[in-house]
Amino acid sequence: METVAVIGAGPAGILAAGTASKQGRKVFLFERNSDIGKKLLITGNGRCNITNKCDIEDFIKNIVNNNNFMYSALYAFTNIDTINLLESFGVQIKTEKDNRCFPKTDKSIDIIKAFYKYLISNKITIFKNTRVKDIILNKNDTFTIYLNNKKPMIFNKVILATGGKSYPQTGSTGDGYIFAHKFGHTIIEPKPALVPIKLKDAKAKKLQGVSLSNVKLTAYLNDKKIHEQIGEIIFTHFGISGPVTLSLSSYINRYPTDKIKLEIDFLPDYTFECLESIIKSLFIRYHQKNICNTLCELLPKRIINYLLDTLNIPLDKKTNSVTRNERHKIISNLKRFRLIYDGLRNIEHAIVTSGGISTKEINPSTMESKLIKGLFFAGEIIDVDALTGGFNIQIALSTGYLAGLNC
Image (cartoon, rainbow, N blue to C red):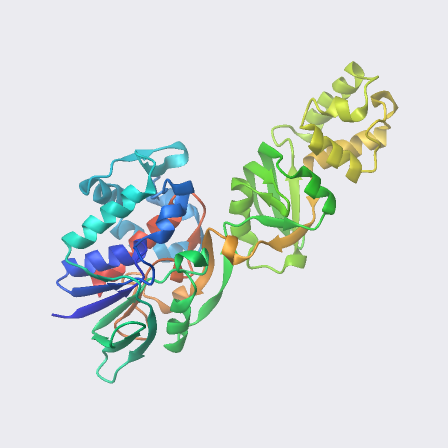
């Protein structure tokens, strides 16, 4: 019986191990933490957004980097397969806004328990608190794995499912990149994805805690639009966060900081002309009020104060004394306000890693290395990342399944 080493007991490693066992392999699963699925426990604010129930073609559109690479994997093990698997082990799944799927209990631990049952039912040998120190390719195409707490072990196949570099406290410290690089693989530089954005403007710190539910954030590279997104943003002590910010970060993380420009449209539902008409009406109705109080009809006071301060318009200036030029400045900045980009927060604050093993060196139909026979990759270690909503976990599960199926 051929033996398989799966390194990393996240969703990718778990599916790889179970699937490989079903192919008649003797599977050993190595996990450096004291338990499996440590990162799964904290996803979705502890609720575990396990997958997304959208059509696969729509799913592909939510993958930011190398989405074509994922076709075979996502059709081999679909989002519906994930739901069916978990429900077969006693976890009922519910679908919420934007097709996001969670356990009905809202407890990520129930997902972990189901995966435990899955591993046990497939007779997987699990080594916890066990770190792989080195992997050597032998002349007979087997692999010797050196461990921190056991004698070296020899395997016919190896599946690397060690994750990326986000949330290093969960065990994702980049060890897999070292092993892959040693075998000749190209590592696309790991970058933070789905991560908050830093701003240079010191005045913006005054907005800490302000949340806006319907704004448009747009990123430009040398004045060419890269991506725009509408939704919620939250101002913080370092810049901005929230769903829109996290999504946008995944589109700009591979570009130099000084080449990126950010703009915010505070009122995307209104055209410039429509907004001008609304503001003219407000100025007539509240002509004796201070300008800051008049504009508070449109947005929270701290936002208005920040905007007027940036435009050097006194907050106590009477509405009826605002010039036509000042009015146009206000409208223009409500629609296209420049945020001074200062890069992304570091990878320790990222939800996922962008970058990793080059997809050009992996067979997308099997997840096997094109360079080393018997070496497979699964999950976040591969240079594929997606937006929030359960997409990244499903990518891990689907690639894990393909790796296990073909090892």
